[in-house]
Image (tube, rainbow, N blue to C red):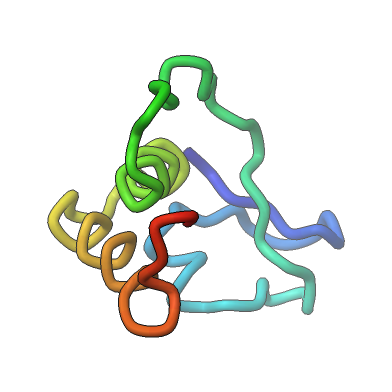
Length: 85
C-alpha cells in the first residue's frame, strides 16, 4: 500500500517510511492512496485490541505482526484497561 500526501505533491511512500517521516516532504499528511477492504476484519465479541491489530495489519503493511500486535495491546493497558473498551 502506498501513502500519499494530502497536499497532492511529492512522492508516495510505503507504510514504514510514511510513519517514520510523519509529515510528507510537501508538508501534507500521509494518507492511504486507497483503502483496503476491511469487511472481514471484525467478528462479534472480538476484544478491542485484536480489532485494532487487524486494522493496523490491513493499513500498515511492511511492519512486523508482532510489533503491530504489541502496539495494539500496549495502547489499551493502564488507564485504558476497561472492559467497555
